[in-house]
Image (cartoon, rainbow, N blue to C red; front, top):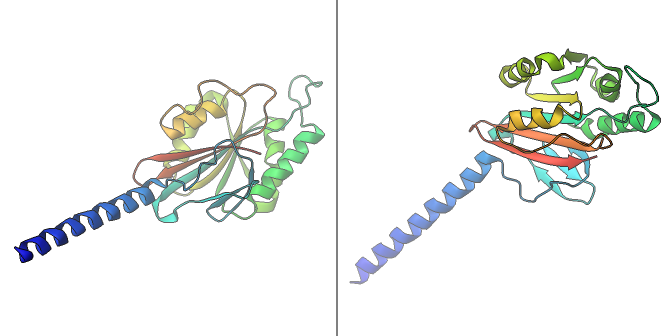
Length: 209
């Protein structure tokens, strides 16, 4: 009787241990964050650690990551100029902030549409990374997304776009609806990170900057 009880106890302990191990592995594979940082202001990214202005952080599991996409709308534009407006002083300051956020982490490619406001938004980032800005056209946006998703050379991609394109790009890369509408015309502060995992799942962080 005692041996049977001990055997049953050992069996139950083994089952619990296996379940816990499976849960831990599953969490690692999905890159589940320990804290919810959605809506928080991003301070900087160092290696694979995202730091927010309120002192919180999320560490991305390098072993489970396939690609990381950093997505922003262009910075503040000069609305007094028609056609292809440049950035305002606030916009230039915001572009510098992007460079500061990304200074301590890897970037393999920087994509921008061929407008002054988008190219100037990532100008400081391209300078500190000593990288060329790769152009893309909103008319062939679907093809561009497929290219960056399947390109084995670039695994850390920064992309700047527009109020009506970054939400849809996010949804496409995430494989689900993160945004159900375009950004407000006056909203320049969204900073979105989409993490594509080797398992096929995606993690999305909707931050501010």
